[in-house]
Length: 334
Image 1 (cartoon, rainbow, N blue to C red):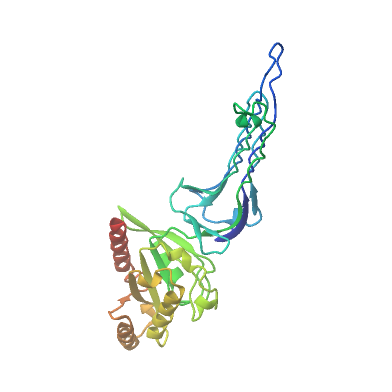
Image 2 (image 1 turned 180 degrees about the horizontal axis):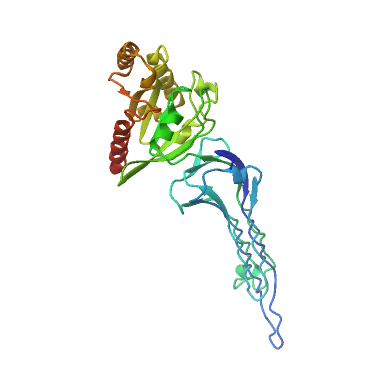
């Protein structure tokens, strides 16, 4: 299934049914009076978060959703039938934005959570509604009220507890594969990861958390360079970020500063989240290079980074323990 995390759709709620003009015609009743019924309510358009979905691919080609008009009223004071609602099934974690892509209409973070995006119009009044002691035979009936309509953006933000960030080729996919049952694509060239990956990490028999891997960031990503920062939304809900840095590169401190600058440029509170910094690929470093790069990175970070190797698994359990404790503390605080 193709991964799609953003879609634009048009929504139109149903118009209300029309009221009618009708009079009671019955033998031996000389003055029957007005009995035109009201129109029925038009259908609403709703969004519902459901389990089992992890992409918005259903809205790639079906982009228009319209609810039916309410039924018209009828004689004998019969009200028109209300129309059924139209419900958009979306993955858990979907944010629904207005056409300006800034106004949040709904944020569906739990299975079964629903939100009304467009309300159906009310039905018009029939002439029975307008009868009074001085106007006993009104010939007025109202049309149904129009339903709401709008374009909206559906944007999926994956539900993950911890997120992986770093430059391309920092070893994020290797770390995800080493710590979970996920099997992302791994290769020795940049931008191997083209869309977010999720893995369930189980540090112990009674603990688990979801780890998200997103495509690597490069300088200028918040301005659209490389794959840009469009995937950073998938780690906005994370309680902690694991910042992986390639230990085989000449200047790991500069790599750290580059990614931090992109997180600050993106916003969304990412730069304020708890961060665990790890120097990866320790199996490929000489002892002298390891010492010098740890010192350089410690000066940039303000504390000594962790040493790990995603390929051999060395140091990975210790990092997972720190992530699990941070996630548990954040969830408890919530």
